[in-house]
Image (tube, rainbow over all chains, first blue to last red; front, side, top):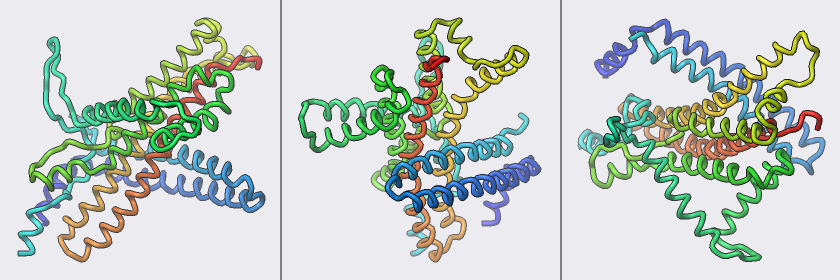
Length: 89
Length: 271
């Protein structure tokens, strides 16, 4: 198992700083997305509690907003992938 | 004997990125160009064939009360037309509804086919390593092609309705003259960034989901212990449910945003 882990590390240890940067960047992007989507969830639950009969429309709006925010978060993931795997050469 | 059982049927691997990249299946040359047929292109073909066979099957007879497959397809189509297209497009619904239906069904079929484990099934049946299935939306070129179709359709629709110069002047709202160039540049940049955002959103969502699935299964190989099997398989089942939900949601979001962009291109400035 250690030689497998060693060979995996050897493939990517050339750009260790890029890996560190990408991991930290993805972590920070996840923090932002969780705060945003948690906010949406809380506000939409509040709105459903105020007026339950339009619950369906509120849930639709919540899903759309959550998907859009997640799309932006995954931009950060894609940039992280680029940072790790797109080395010079 | 336990080790032999582990080595004979292994459906996981250490590299979680291998199942999501395009694997070449065969090559053929056309007119001097070498075209490599990858498994993502195969999945696109399979999705197209499935849709071309199933949807006309559901549209054969006009019934007042549709049942079965016709009911399924018709209810999805009516939902897309009344809840997605008509509130956004208004009078232009009938002109663009075919594009909306096509994009939704195609992306949904691609995502759902990506959740079918064809490689593992083939390996279990025949015992040969292969790479026949896969989620085609994990290929940025395929999602980029879908997004560029939206891009071409929105601007072609706007140019056809208003003419080229009037459409280009519609891009900027009425602002005072000093900041008009800045607003114009901003609108051009936003019109160019939107298809990228569409493509990357679908690509990254499906890619992240499949990498998570492959990583959870690969944990069994990394730990090489029987105790990891039950939590890992449980996590994979839970994530697969989430991936099915994401498949529907991403198809819906792509369709909704494409409809929104078409309506933005078609709206009259003084409306």
